[in-house]
Length: 93
Image (cartoon, one colour):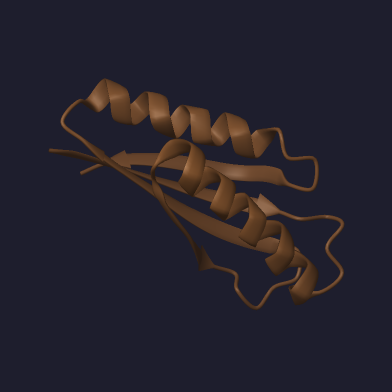
């Protein structure tokens, strides 16, 4: 069993409140869960208006599959105009 964990630090430059930030992230997390069948959660920066850290986990028996899924998740997040990816890390457990 291969577990891939992707940690993504985000900047939301247009967010003016926690409510606005939560709206953007809630929709993003739902789309990613449904489209890629992964677990995703905000793991840091919950009290900051313009910063967030997301954790994405994928489990499979094939490391290549895990890597492809996490790459597609990163590509999807990169296409969201309200977000900027500051840093990303992928670990395998």
